[in-house]
Length: 142
Image (cartoon, rainbow, N blue to C red; front, side, top):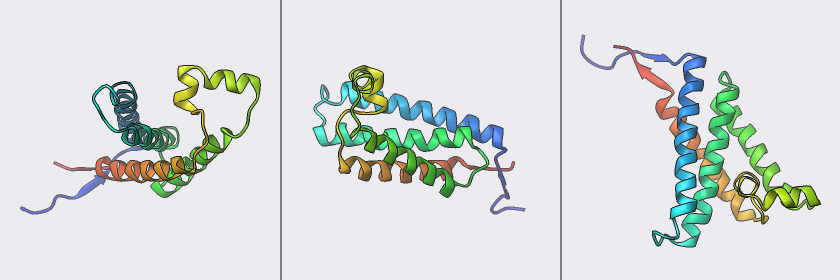
């Protein structure tokens, strides 16, 4: 019979592996944007907020790696909570935390300067993550 094939959901372990692979791709894209965006002549807005968008996408995907049985909406809610916590943590200043933020890892993971605009970029990144996850979340049965 021709026509649409039935769709079988992906098993949790396979879903975690797919999300981990997607997260690695997103990390590579984010690092590339941060390292090569300015030399390629991209506007500062694209480099700054594109990186924030990809960071939030990575957070969403990693939540899905760790908790593969959650619904996308719950994954998104957890990712939003993490993003808000990380952004508002920039208002907290202790010597050890400020020292960590001055490292490359600290700047990439936690950032340095608080901005409400980052929350907008994070929301877009999480929505992008939901969209990507939905795209690859089902497979056709042959």
